[in-house]
Image 1 (spheres, rainbow, N blue to C red):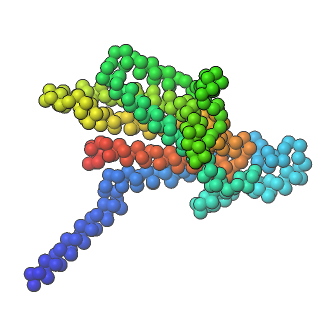
Image 2 (tube, rainbow, N blue to C red; image 1 turned 135 degrees about the vertical axis):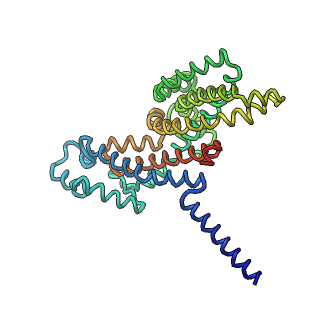
Image 3 (cartoon, rainbow, N blue to C red; image 1 turned 180 degrees about the horizontal axis):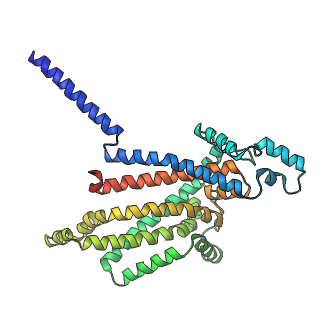
Length: 344
């Protein structure tokens, strides 16, 4: 009797605990799951809004894809036939609704010019943009954090140099800096190619050479922002009470800086990193155009010029999804770094 009662009690206890865990998962009881759930819910109206806005802006531009394909001297009958075949004579709301229903099924349509599936075009161009973004973020984080830490420890001339670098990095447009880098390092010195992209699988060395100048042009803005933010955060942490107590207790300077001060300062740097990463994503469009890189930026620019609505819509939606992933990653990193967020 006693054993049976214990078994039933254990089953009830286990069932209650399991239900509690399930409720916790569904309601985002774990901080990480809560962050993911909130971001996914926010992403739905964001994606819809961006797709609607990009559709409206593209259709408001003068001309259309049929006129771009046939040219200005085409016969009116041919022009109207092509518009009907492409569905451009339908009401705008019906065009958008058709695109949206296809997109919900995973079909982003095909290019109005060459008939290539939009998803295939994005898949072919994305490695170029991903290489440019990853390289720029890596350089920005490594160089920016290093400069920020050194300037916080040394101060004086190094601190003023970081302030100057921040002003220069925020003031210089990436496309202008890219053009100047081409003149110096490609035309005068001949060290790096001025344009073009070599896939990694074809030649890793040439792939790296083709990315040096675009990455340098795109990363200066992020490097300057991270260096300044790291310096200010480190100065605040190094001046706090617990750092002075740890130093008075004989804790080594290297351990004090790297294991305690930098970790606590990193939460502020991570929040800035998200904003910088999104800004860099927009900067890839101009940098890819300057260096003639076959990435998503040049793809959407070409689609906009040719009124290729499915291509513009697809790339805009993909860029928005990348922004959502970046923000989600930053939120997860911030939640992991800051114990106060985890216990809320």
